[in-house]
Length: 225
Ligand SMILES: *Cc1c(COP(=O)(O)O)cnc(C)c1O
Image 1 (cartoon, rainbow, N blue to C red):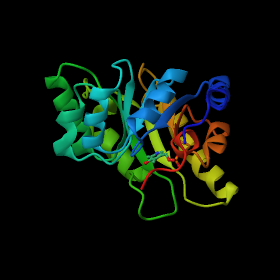
Image 2 (cartoon, rainbow, N blue to C red):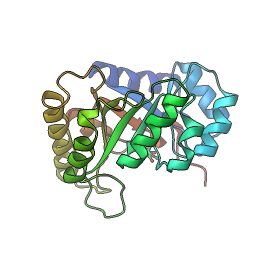
Image 3 (spheres, helix red, strand yellow):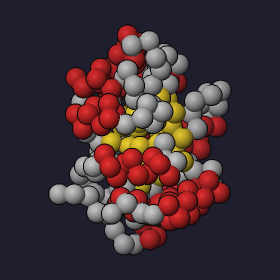
Image 4 (tube, protein in one colour):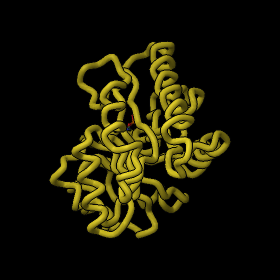
C-alpha cells in the first residue's frame, strides 16, 4: 500500500526543510508501487539486492538515482558500477578498492559511504571507529580512490523503542562525521552525506544531523513476504 500523494509531499517537505534527501527503499516492492512514487516526483530509490536492482532498473525510467544500500559482495561490484549513483554500506577497504577499480574501468565515478557500526546489536554490518580510521589511513584520506570518492558515512541505530538510545547512537555518528569533515576531508568536495534514519527513527535522525534518510515501509507499506 503506497502512501498517497499528499502524504508523500508532506514527508518530502519535512525532509526538504532540513536539507535532507529522502531515499525510497524499494527492496521486494513491485514495480507498480515504485512507478507510483515516481509519478509523485520521487527520484532517489534504494535497493538491497543486486539481482533485483538489475531487473528493476531496466523497467523504470533512467533518471532515477539508484542507491545501493545492502551488503555488497566484491564480485558483484562490476554489475552495479555502470549505473549506480551511490553505494552506502561500504564496510571494507577491499570492497571500496574494488568499487574504485571497476568504476575506473566503467569510466565513471561512484560515490561511496562507509558504514559505521553504531548499534548495540552484534548482527549489524559496519566498521568500528578504529577500523574506519585504518581504512582511511590506508587510502591517504581518500585521495587515491579517484573513481570511488568518499561521500560520507552511513549507520543504522539499534532496533529499540528507547529513543534516548537511538539519539545517542545517531549523535555519536554525527559527531564522527563532523570531525572527519572538519579534519581529513576539510578540502573534499564530496564528503557531505550522512545517511542515517529509517521509517521508525528518521525524525530522530534528522534532529541529530542526518542528510539522507532511507525510508521503506512508511512509503510502501509493509514489505511483501
Ligand atoms: C530495508 C532498509 C531500510 C528501510 O527500512 P524501513 O524500516 O522499511 O524504512 C533502510 N536502510 C537499510 C539499510 C535497509 O536495509
